[in-house]
Image (tube, rainbow, N blue to C red; front, side, top):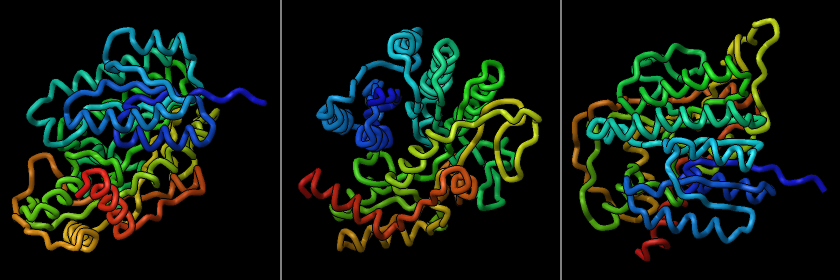
Length: 339
């Protein structure tokens, strides 16, 4: 029997990391997870996720910050991971306005430490999380990976776009196969308390008002977490290869000078914010009290992913609609909080 492949996942106790690791363990991977359990949101939620993962003997949890000098280098030297998925980051558009240093440390220094470790001990493929926010002020939709993206509107987005440039340079210089995946408003069970769905559900169930920005005139390409995980899982086995002749197929974001590619993972069908709120109302059986607000600094009015490249590379296109996805979250929320 072939030895199980080892996957290393940063941000392992986070929302996406938790779901991804459950999938990798189910697929027979040995998984090593790193997480700092910082207090950006309720640490209890992170601890519960980790406790569930630790029930599988194939999972090893390590506590630490990705930006800690030498931590990742030592880990890569010891474990020699076959595949790497980098999810650890300081998240949140609005928080980046108030606390930008946290983004420099976790997102920029953390990515540097990871790239250095991968240079010394190269995995077969490394996937690094980026964001739809990297498209910034682009107004041509759906967002295509080959579009220019130089107008980020928040410091969070700027650090993630910087990660893409940093990773490309390492892919070119050292031949590291790297895929950056830009994800779009991920939601689902075990989600983050700072995300709209969590906040809206909590408030609606408690009869409290919700803040609706840009007076509700917003749309998002809401992506259910299991759809995102399926995209990541399939991309793990689709490592980019530098084109020998420098010619890139039309529509592909593959670099002409490096084994590097950017891929959108989104639902491919934007939903109006008010329709999303109506889905929460339907799932909770309650009516939302909406406090209409102006647009928040750093935010964008719409996102919409073109998922053609994902489909070409993996044969997969996300399909979960918000009615089904929101209900799954509300059912989890009520069970978790006994509401």
